[in-house]
Image (tube, rainbow, N blue to C red; front, side, top):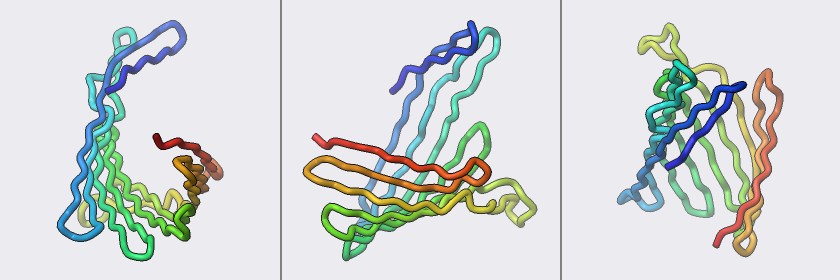
Length: 160
């Protein structure tokens, strides 16, 4: 659960939301399925106008193969914006403490295809790496963002 608060000029709004998810290991060795619902809540009210939260549902699959290879795919739906995206990626554990990653993210929009939707141009191929040592992680990712330029992310984590 989460408490939300926002301010625009002198107007403020607050609200709450929850994220829920489930993960299941299948009978197939290394195959995992998952589903989530994010930002589920009543929205936020500024003065006399209520804004809906960016409620999102997703479903994904991951398959850990021999030799340290992980392959995953995810379908995501932004409920109120009616926007969909599909992503897929892979991670290769080169050594116990080093992982190389690559992925692809595409938007799905309304179009003239038979089912009313079409894959949009790629939002970007991404690549990165992760270093894991004694409960500490350092992850780096590079993703082109079209007209917005390139994005680089660096994160640090501690497992305890």
